[in-house]
Amino acid sequence: MKLLLISNSTNAGEPYLKYPIARIGEHLAGVKEVVFIPYAAVTFSYAEYERKVQERFNEIGVKVRSIHREKDPRKAIRNAEAICVGGGNTFALAKKMQEQGLMSAILKRVKEGVPYVGWSAGSNVCCPTICTTNDMPIVEPQSFKAIGAVKFQINPHYLDANPEGHAGETREQRIEEYIEANPRRYVVGLREGCMLRYINGKLELIGARPMRIFKKGVEAYEVKAGDDLSFLL
Image (cartoon, rainbow, N blue to C red; front, side):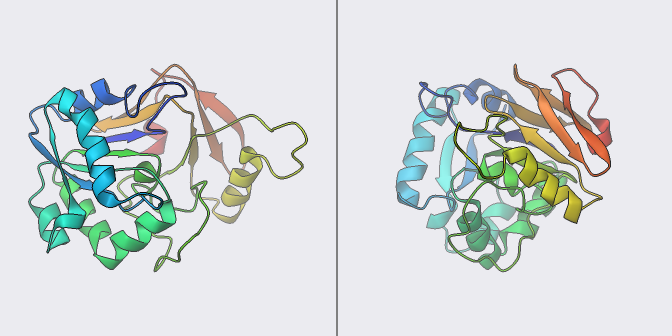
């Protein structure tokens, strides 16, 4: 498999998809066109999302073809050179993907070696479930099951901070609830500006910030770029 799982599309104060585009270009080397899944968009149209991504992908010479234009979405996945899944609301994304039978179709293709790129919600749906998303369940998918290309869960946009005056649970406490209920599953807190790349059987962290690891019965700890992540595979 060739996976590039990005925490966030945009760093504060930077243009859309600017910081990861070089890595995306490397990951998609030789690819002329990607099938793009825009279904995490809620407050703007799928066509607008396609246009927005295409503007950035012009820099790497890759055409973006949104799956919402296809009469047969599963056929589009079967014929895709590469697959790209954008961020937004994970529940909206999962619902539409499940309705169109895209989860299993994508898993089959990525196992065949078709490159996959996702950011935020697009990284969430590469996991076994969408249960570690930060999003509000604005719609109800058929289930929480996702593509399952990796065995661990990702929490994108992972934050350590707890705003002053906020009396609710921290992000870490929410993840601790998840691992209590799902003791066999690892969760990785992927901070902004960072991504995970899986290629040739090796998983690596890319980015200047460490990644936080959660597993029931183990005190949460940090790993950094260059560390061995084989325990997650």
